[in-house]
Length: 93
Length: 206
Image (cartoon, rainbow over all chains, first blue to last red; front, side, top):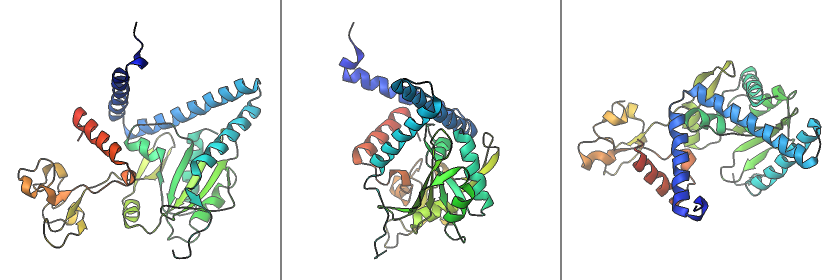
């Protein structure tokens, strides 16, 4: 049986179909429902990050897990923000 | 503290400090587009009120730990204050000051109050982009104006405007009223524009 990821066109079609479903689903929701979805997705995402951190640390201590997540987030931020922000404004402005 | 609890605190703090504000970032995008997960609460804050950003920062002090150093966006030179929630999960709070860009100021002035049931409060939200019209199509004077002041549109919706670019019977005059660029697409690469246009045509988006 051919694998989907061996066929770029089929993979692209699948990606487009998934994105189309997301757009159509969002269009069927109210503003309040969409905002609720943002909160739900974000909380779930952080829950999964905590699970990942605990698994990596081999611990069940949530405080330790959140500390690890915080460390990841700080590192991501420093990479993301590099060159985009500065602490001094040009004198000409 | 969950994200909605943090968002409520941020909105309440901004309200309490009496600073005009609106939510931006993923929360605003979620309100009008496709919902996605986020790791921060972004707020655009007016600067014409005494204290401004600092007042909100002070109000949020018990829940959010802000960086001592304010940073500037190297593209817009807008002021940005970043904080992280003191409790887990480590959500971020980003406060931006409205800067002196005419479009940003117009966008901020268009904000409207939206009641969010999950937050149990009202919050300032960006209003959907309106289209802009040129005062003189093909003429020497081409200044942008809103349909409310355009003598051709007279405040009508774009789809029913006789001179709008969609549904216009006279294509020669269709370019008179065109939608203005959107802020989120300011730095969009050409290939992304092409992809978005193609997709919109395929799926029958307006």
